Amino acid sequence: MDRSYPPKDPRAHPEGALPPPRPEAIARFWRHEGEPGIRGYRAATVCRRGHLQEADLVVPPEYLVLGDSDLGKCSRCGADVLGACQECGLRIRGLPISHAHNKDTDLALPKFCDRCGHPHPWSTRQDRIFELENLLDQQDIDEADKDVVREHLARLQALDPIDDPEGKEARKRWGAIIKRAPELLKGAGSKAAETLIDIGVRRALGLD
Image (cartoon, rainbow, N blue to C red):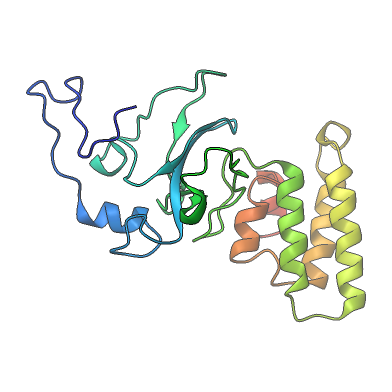
């Protein structure tokens, strides 16, 4: 891939030159304004199914900051390739700067955005349950209540939606979690649980 920036591609602009990137888009892309990959982490591109494309970008992926999110398709599965958090626009965390030139370094794909906490599309149900368990550890509630919530989360992780078509079991479990840990499903917890709780259960529990 041509990593020159701004990229040139006559498909989008017949005259052969793309417009300059918008400063606010670049600021949104990098974690720290004015630090385009100099410290911290490089940027990565990953398909929606979790197949890594690149892990050491030092400039925003082509078109991402130009108002066009088309980064092509994954050569392994055909899914759309993503270059930033779908919620806040932060770069997908790539290799640490200190390891970016080490070709033997494998990237452990981030499951969540490290700015807003929104789950990336390839994070699994188990990943999101684990994140809720991590957030539960930070809750200012009794340990006994935490133990009960952990048990409900474990049951929800094992619950097959096919076995609970009307959502009664899920509604009971999530309701009990909210009762014991009322702040857990707020903020980052709300983002982690977004795809774990179907719309009917969310409405029944007053989460929408």
